[in-house]
Image (cartoon, rainbow, N blue to C red; front, side, top):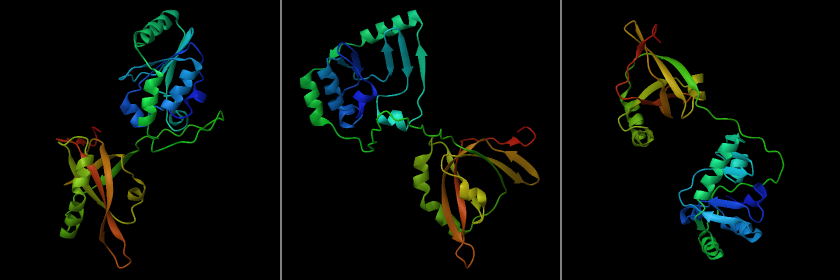
Length: 253
C-alpha cells in the first residue's frame, strides 16, 4: 500500500482491508501509514496480518486474485498478472478466507506509531492520476549460440581475469559452479551486444570433434589486453559453467 493508494483503490465506510503493517514493512516504505490513516478516517475496517503476502480483491460477488500491490510501482513499472473469479462457491471460499485473517485490528494509536517509523521508499515514483499508463516491455534473457575453439591465454590475460574473479564468484547461482572464460576480438559484434544475464550455448570444436554445452549464464564482460597500436583490446566473456557439465554431440543437439 504505497503513496496514492487511496486514489488507486478507493474504499468506503464498512469496507475491509487486511494489510501487512509490521514495522519492517513500514520502515522499508512498502506500506505507507499515512494512506492507511486516510482509509481509517473514512471508516474502513483495517486489520494487520504480519506475514501476509497474498493479493486478493473481493467486490461483493466478484474477486481478483493477482500479484499486484496497491502501489504506483505495480501500476506503472511492473509486469503483473491476475485471475478474475465470479463462481459462487469460490467467492464464498474467498470471503471465508478473508474473514479468517481479520484478527488484529489496527488502531489509530498503532497508526501514529507507524507514522513515526515510516521511511519514504528510495525509488519514489510519481503518481500519474487516472491517465492511461503504458506497461513496460517484458524483459527476458536472450539466448546466444557461439562457436568456440581452444586457446592458450597469455600471462597478462590470466592476471586480468584474476582481478574480478571474487566478484564473479559472488554472482554464481551455486558455489559448486565455476567460471568459464572465452576470449573475443575487439571487433566482435556479439561481444558488443551480449549482456549480463543472457544465456549462451557454446559449440566447441576440438580435434575434429564438435560438442554442444548446456546453456550458461553470462556473469559479465571484461576488457582484455591491448592488441594493436590504436589501443583496441580483446574482450573476455565470463560465464557460469554448471558443475559436471556434459556436452552433447552436435547431431544429438
